[in-house]
Structure formats: structure tokens, C-alpha cells
Image 1: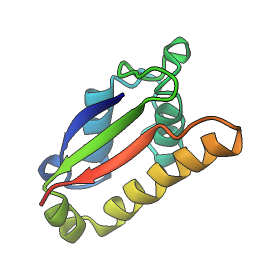
Image 2: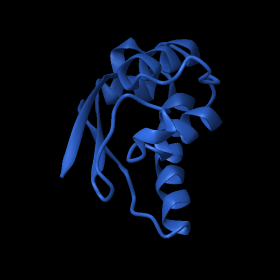
Image 3: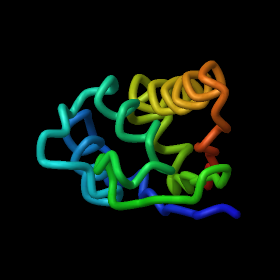
Length: 111
């Protein structure tokens, strides 16, 4: 089963707004470090509610789909953030697969 999570790419104008948006949508904890290493950590455990790193959860083996609207404009406006989102989503899945766990993230981009 998948859980679609809507992310409005038009709300991202820089790193602060990126981290604000994800912290709000995913309910990251107050100690969220607001950098991509912390983002990786929070997103890695979407199927482990006991870790308390997000308020969005799926069952083990299920996938969270990040549905990014305004992706074309995000890529043009903030190419470094766009690239980091793609690379870090892949890293989260790689990290899990290396430990014998299933991938947990998928990306879906809307113009």
C-alpha cells in the first residue's frame, strides 16, 4: 500500500522554506536539525513510528509517495534543492536496502 503526501513545490524558495515545509507536512520532531542529514534520518524511519521522527507513517513494506507539485518551477528556481531532494530520496532507499529493509520513498513530480 502507498501513502501519497502532497508537497507544494511553489512554497519552496530556499533551504529555510524547504525545511519548514517538510517539518510541517511530516511532523518532524522539535529537534529536527533542518539539514539534509536530518531529513534523511527522519525519512528513513517512516515505517517505524516508535522512533518518533515523523507523524507520517506507513506499515513496513509500504511506500510514501512524495507528490511534488510545481516541480518544474522548483527545479528552475532552486536547482540545488531539487537535486538534493532527488538524491536524498534515493539515499534513504539505498540506506534501507543496504540493511535488508524495503525502500520507503517514491517521488512523483507534477508540472
